[in-house]
Image 1 (cartoon, rainbow, N blue to C red):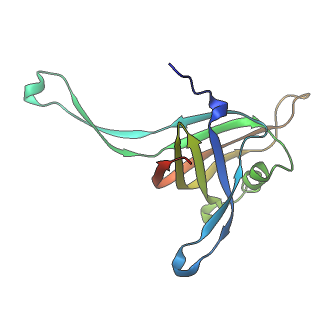
Image 2: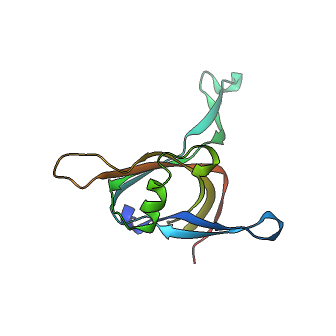
Image 3: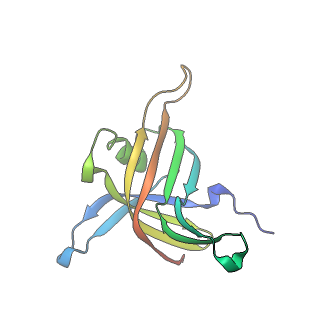
Length: 148
């Protein structure tokens, strides 16, 4: 069995948006890896549960929705493009927190609109480097393709 360590995954944050004609623009992505110690993906699935007579007391489940998110934790690296972008959103509200995210994992590339939440760019123990973290909430259905 082949193992896929977390460091083999790649996470990019959209740090600049260039509007295009007809409303379709392009994002410039910066890799979020320097200082990052952990990433946790949570699918936050919504489930409908049904108890049919023929199930004889056992449930039938259907996943009917999802609100995926990625929890990122680490140490603050000032000067890193991805961290600087996220830290700059710490006190922003509304659409100023919107971005795009690109994930490369297990041979797939996943791109999705996203919102940056729960930004932490300072704090920790006296002799530690400042803490860094955020939650990246995926907005809408991601585009999943084979990574090239």
